[in-house]
Length: 373
Image (cartoon, rainbow, N blue to C red):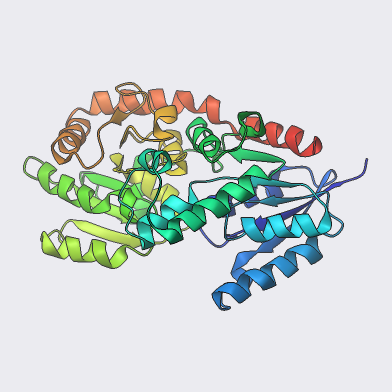
């Protein structure tokens, strides 16, 4: 049987941390090499170049790599997606797009003053020319893809709002490797040199505005009126200086620690060591962080937004609290820290729900989809 050759256009690749890097590692490590060959073209190889030049050079790399490939698989709708679309056009090859989020909205929030939620953003015409241009680019790329893969039903609905026919959007839940031995809380704390009695709240993600880390710092200040937890935040990003300033402003440096970017293995130890994972986010496609907390039997508190509603059943597999509702988040966190029986029930129910997000199921779907192109 001839191999299916796939040229992968990715914005991130190991040791980078992020959804695209995790997804490529999943494909390379799990799909059978006797039936699939992957040619990975990394955007990191051209990121040092000036903006327009880097995309031209990247496109030329894609054209060379994809000449004898069956199709191009792009993991982002703009930065690598647009060059992939042009490369596919030049080579007369199909291309598949995997969407991890709304690129135009994310850039709009970080760079162009957008303060709407993603649902509000896709429903309204934007006034910024730069944002409208990014919307047009991602819509153009998505509408011309052979198929668009979304990691949650929520993101599938967003892609349809871009003008992609629903019949060409496929949902394939994806997640990091969740198998293997679960690290016990006591073992994890021993590795991190954390005392058994210390109460640990953990959050993680890119330090960007919609993750709500500043609000989470305020939540922990509220919880400390009745208990004495410490907050640890793992991750890095453009919002680090803003977060550091907020920590200093509210005098929280004594009990809030920024861990910086951690490897997958390091983050797994912190998740196992935590008493509760809190994700005060305004947007989420499908959170790998929450899925890993489920696997580690660590209780979860998060917001009823995006793909979180596909992961968490309120009061059963976790608690759902509105974004930046400091009083409600504080009350939920205090409850989980105080009522350990309730916390254990949440964690156990969440761990049992992981069958819906099995790696084998995702790989089977991708295998079938790739062979059909």
